[in-house]
Image 1 (cartoon, helix red, strand yellow):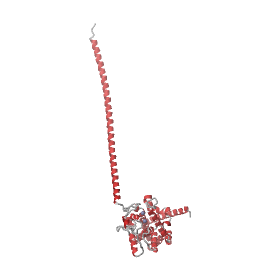
Image 2 (cartoon, protein in one colour; image 1 turned 180 degrees about the vertical axis):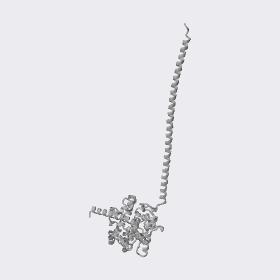
Image 3 (tube, rainbow, N blue to C red; image 1 turned 135 degrees about the horizontal axis):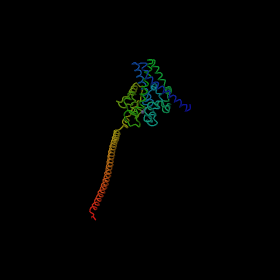
Image 4 (cartoon, protein in one colour; image 1 turned 30 degrees about the vertical axis):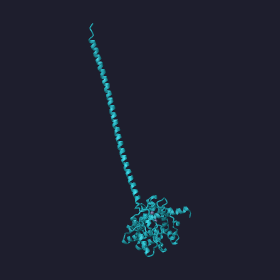
Length: 369
Ligand SMILES: [Zn+2]
Ligand SMILES: [Zn+2]
């Protein structure tokens, strides 16, 4: 097949997947009201959520992507089957892409970084993007060598189809709606939260080069995957909750399976790893200091602006007063000038009157004949 044809095929498959994804969401919202609910139906939804979440976290993630423990070939297939039944593509596709996420976490080459391409793209957009549709066996040669895994990766929808038939056989349409519909939608978003929310919401214990966080709520709904900052710090351990109070149900189950010899060689984080690269008190103190400095600078700038405003206002007032005073002075000057002119005119009149009087007096005292 030419590259263009392959691209077109991937785009078409992507569109079909998105349509199915939307359809299942819509049906899961509406159909529970049509088929009704029972304790059995809710139990089925919850049971299939837990079992399939285990398939994703213990199987796809910890086993296939990170090789955090060992298992016999039959159990490896069981894990792959359970993972595939969650409708998140095949084990080789999932684990191969996840290895890429760790290699390039939160850089432009990361497949699903909320930092690089936004929250919703990291949550599910990347999952449907044609550019990520192919399984690259080169990313996961250690498992691509198994024929049954290659088959399952190619026909990854088979386990979900079998499960859907089982749900229908068990409880008819109600079993299908709750066991496959509602359960799968919750399972999708529960898993997707680790790619989106777990890089945004929570606390950081380790200074990893990415934005991963630890979050109890996410750990509970994903059977332990919420300790994502721990996981990015040391990705090869079977437990993601590093301390007793970090609840990690997948790990407890894998530990229990090791007691009956199904799983073995569970990889735990070495003691020094637990202490390495802690988000140090010094770093935190420096961050707090920077924050305080920025706040003080902001306050200072505010005060500076306020003072500048007061000065400008005072200057404006002074200018107003000066203009008013000058105007008054000019008025007084004009008035004085007018008074002087008037006085001079009066003096001239008086002088004229005096001269006239003198002339008249001169005429009066002239000697007669
Ligand atoms: Zn991550
Ligand atoms: Zn991982």
